[in-house]
Every structure is written in structure tokens, then in C-alpha cells.
Length: 241
Ligand code: PXP
Image (cartoon, rainbow, N blue to C red):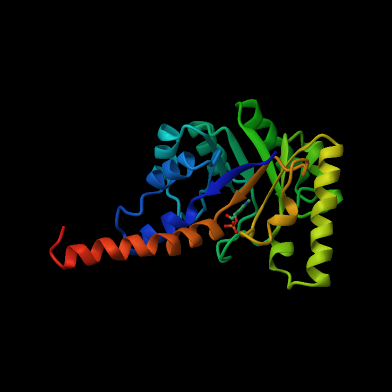
């Protein structure tokens, strides 16, 4: 059975837009936990465009569930992870100009660098997951680094138009999950998953330990919460509260 980890980066995006203290990612994390999330995922980007260092520190101090820190393979991030000690890290490729993480890590190409980073983090008691495309060669390389887990990048599947292209992407993802399980790599999945496209990946023996999902959940929360937010402000405007 899979666990849901909620990525709360975009709560911080909204906060940073106005430089206010709200919406507070720590309060958001607590609501996620109360309603079934078994972990909280944040991506501390090099440019700190959403989650900031103080958010990660606050989450570390307040979470009752698991903290999964997504980060680039840089010296700075490794030092932060060693200091904060999240239960898990997910190593992602990162380019400053991208809107979100746009592709998987090329573990094959940077094998020695990633292997030593995995050793350093796991030697400090932090589980490492490598965010990779659904590609057997990348899964093999990930296994050889000694990483406990991989996260299969579901973006190409999620973004493909419905039809043959999406079916093909889905079967690539499913084969990758099967293979990772066969070679005893813990297998997670994420990116672009929403309330519809996640369905073929769910079920009892789906081979996925954790789903990391952000944008669709935070987007749904904005619309679901709007009615109450407007009702409350209407009452204040009318002098009833
Ligand atoms: N997993 C990883 C490794 C990511 O980089 C992201 C995006 O930050 C996600 C999952 C969540 O993607 P989304 O916001 O599209 O659900």
C-alpha cells in the first residue's frame, strides 16, 4: 500500500508572492498530517524561490510525520541535509531557469559524484532517493550507487495527451516500477500527478512506496477553500463578526 507525501512548496510560493507570513507552510503541513499525509516533501531550491531555510528548520522541529527534503546534488545542500537531518532526501537535477524539476537525474553520467553523495547522506542516517526517468539503465545505475530508493519521474506520463502517447508513457512507468521492485529498490513516484492520472498507478500491490504530490493538491485546496474564505470575509464586511 502506498503512502501519500504532500509537497507543500507552493504554499510558500503564495506566501512569498506578497512577502507576508501567511499562508504558513508549517500550518499547511500540520493540516496535511491531520488528514492522512504520511510525509511532507519540500524542495529547497538553490534560488530559494519558494521554501526557505527557515521553513525547513521549522518543519524539522514541528512535524510528527516524515520530512522528505528534495535537493540538488550540491555541497551546500548536503551540508544543510546533514545539519537538519530529514528522514529522507530526494536528489533532483536543478536548473535555475526551469519552472519545476523538468527531467530525471542522469545517474549514469554522474555516477561517481552521486555514489559518494549517497554514501555521505546515508552514512549520516538519511535515506536517499534518486529522482530518475522510467529508464532501466538509470534504475541499474541508481541501484549501484547504494541508494535505498528511486523516485520515478511521472512527468512525461502526466503531461502526455490522452491516447497512445499516454498509454506508452504509462507502460514505461509501470515497467520501471516493476523492475525497481525486482532488484529490491524502494520505489517512489511523483511529478504532475493529479486526481485523474494517478488512478492507474494506485492499488494494493502497485509497487510504489510513496507518492510525492504537490501542485494538484495545493491547487485543489485553493478552490475548495474559497467558499469558506469568501463567506467569512462577507460577514466581516457586513459588520457581523
Ligand atoms: N517529486 C519531485 C522529485 C519533484 O521535484 C516534484 C516537484 O517539486 C514533485 C514530486 C511534485 O510534483 P507536482 O508538484 O507536480 O505534484
